[in-house]
Image (cartoon, rainbow, N blue to C red; front, side, top):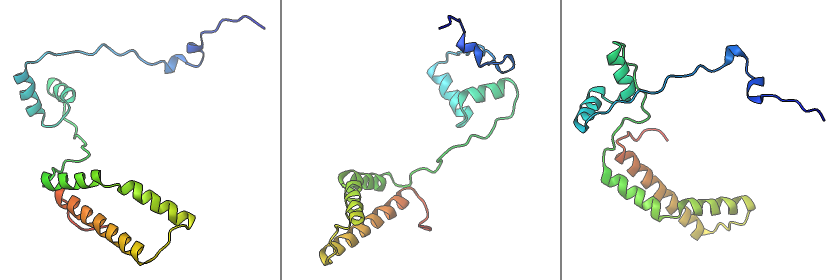
Amino acid sequence: MTNSRHNFNEIGESPAKAPKKREAPFSLRLTFEERAQLEEAANGVPLGAYIKAVLFSQDLQKVRRRNTNPVADHEVLGRVLAALGQSHLSSNLNQLARAVNTGTLPVHPEIESELREACADIAAMRAALIEALGLNGGGA
């Protein structure tokens, strides 16, 4: 066995690809009112990006938001979420899928009726969610 000393942190790095050291971040203390005024002026843009753009006279880049649509009806949304929370929908659907896959689901009129009722309940929850989120009802 040879006794060699290697600095394994440096073996795989080439000098051209060595990461550049960044300067320490700059912190700025603001009063509550100053911060509120700054956030209002930033209009949804991250404060760091806004401050840099104003300070260095740069154009602000558009901020990409995932969902900017407000909830149209919070009460309806709350009712739907409460119904989903009280139901055992995911567990029941999993049990049904397992029974179908194993071939142990007896399909008689009572089961068929219950499945149709469950489908109608899911459709009603979907419609209520669409209404609460202010979306149009088109599409599947």
